[in-house]
Image 1 (tube, helix red, strand yellow):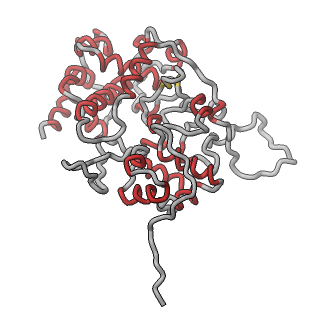
Image 2: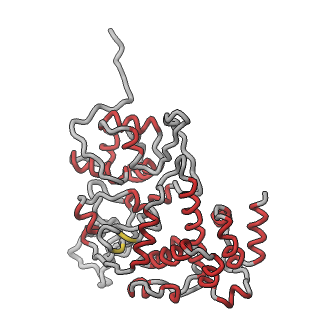
Image 3: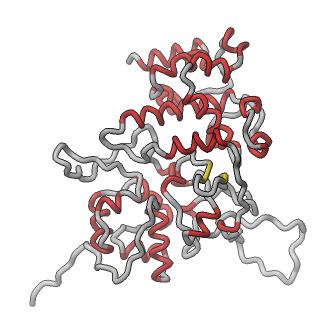
Length: 370
């Protein structure tokens, strides 16, 4: 009797929805599941993506790091080319001198491609979700994505019903377009006796129904347009673009320490009102919610495009602090901060020297010389 033939290559699906331009793998797989009216885990299995547990978390990982073997499985099941599959991920498209793809080479460069990148979206545009059937682009995973250029509106970072951040890896099975935050507590302290306790209740608000706030801020629109031109993944010939993004991330960190509402002159009123006043307790850029990140991106973008960095330093820090720089002991920075500052170009040395203070800057210089 002949032995039973086994293969790890998935069977070709009868019908596959094509990915939208710039769509993320997470979004596309969710749409495939909705098309076949099956769960997320079942859809991933049909596409040849290994699923052990927590399909949402695994799908987030695949959106960041997809191996050549996994991409080949998706290609065999759908007919998409490897380039089309990798274009939906943050996995670098490394090739050799002959133009051949280097298999399974993935580098976590500067923390760009990490699970943290896909846990919380930079924001969503409700109009885009409505027009594209709850499908979202890879670009929204970048924390500096604050504006939808197509609809000239701010991306929504939290659900307005429950205030929970929008986390695609937590989307409930077969409901990628619904908020997964906990249902807000009832104003009544007592639950009616007729209501049976069924555990945690989910918000379930459709993300496409979130309110839209339009912008008339031309400065921020231009900054967002420039940021959108930066490549989402590493690859050959992108050194200049990567250096520009590295500098921008350094400036974002400095802005989170030093920015004040006075730096938002000309910004939309909602951004000025939503920007927190300067406080030494602001330790991380990820702590800026709502329109706070839009204000940060606007300030960091203005610093990035300024030709005179000395002038930019005085504008950010104020004449008083530039004349008498001092360290910030209540802002202890760890190794992640050190590596972030080390990625800054020589152009940023004046603003780093004055914003960090002499002691911290000497520490940074020592690490750079190692």
